[in-house]
Length: 315
Ligand SMILES: [Zn+2]
Image (cartoon, rainbow, N blue to C red; front, side):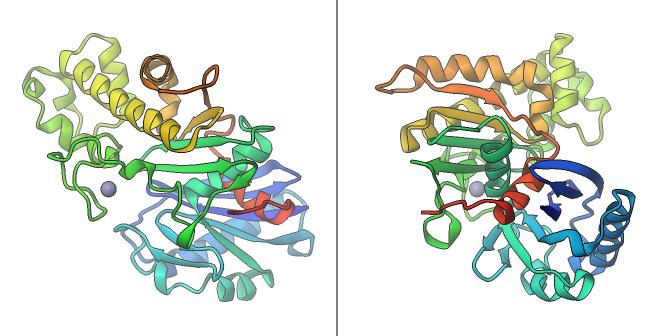
């Protein structure tokens, strides 16, 4: 079975042709998420048709179009409800109508963190697990949960989704959600430049040479011994570790999968989070396996295909 998949992320739009749980073609472009989605749709359509052609497939081979999106999503109606300051016209965008007009296909829309977990659960690091948490560390912080073999959704699909908005500092920074001091506001890619600029050792740091520093730069400078970089990296990793521990306390998973762009620097992230979980989590079983996603670049795309290909159960 072949599925056309789109991931509307905060930093990039990814597009792929997925077949039997594998990406056979993939392309990405800058999100330019401040622009209207309606203005980007023709480019997305052209790219997907191009990818299909290059894979020697046609729309008649395809089961549908899967769209994973940042923000809150109504999976029943295939609508984006709220995007947290990205693709602001997305709630008005009719994905069903667009997929039908562009490809003559049906459409499914899901939140990107939920989609990423589905991709890893069915085709990656979460295979075979019945109780699973995924954290996606990137532009924002997303989470999703599998509970007793069912994908957790709860009311409006929000259950398990907002792990990035667990408050880690009630006196912390204003988030893009209504909250203050959420993990995402303290330690995500969008929050990083502000955290760096306010660090007391900023002016002694090579970080000031970068106009929009990301975690790759931060980890690299931390590795070279830059003091501000070391302290900020340590702070962020502790925030993520705190979220991991809280998710363990809430959902009792056997495994936590860490995904998202930040995990390209896994050497700086994985060991300290594993250590923190081992020391801080209060559990009654042998331990929680903390592991990296198998599909850092394509978990959400694979997850959208999983929605067409398998009999995923939801609670
Ligand atoms: Zn928040």
